[in-house]
Image (spheres, rainbow, N blue to C red):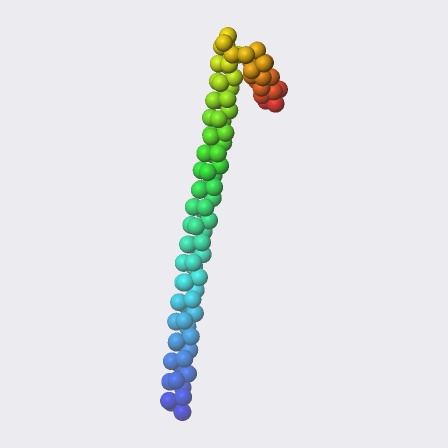
Length: 94
């Protein structure tokens, strides 16, 4: 009888340790998951900012080119008119 009681106590102790181990593992995995999510969010925001900056940079280059074309007397009048139309369209959308 004492042996059975000792076996049950050992099983209970083992189960308690296993539950404690699983709880700590779950907490660790939750922390790791939240860190990964935060890193992913930061990466997404950084990439979005880079895309916006690239878009603005590209637009500035196109505006600069249009202005240069308008001021160049050697350029054909239809090209200058296209540059003017582009700038008008750009200003109308802003």
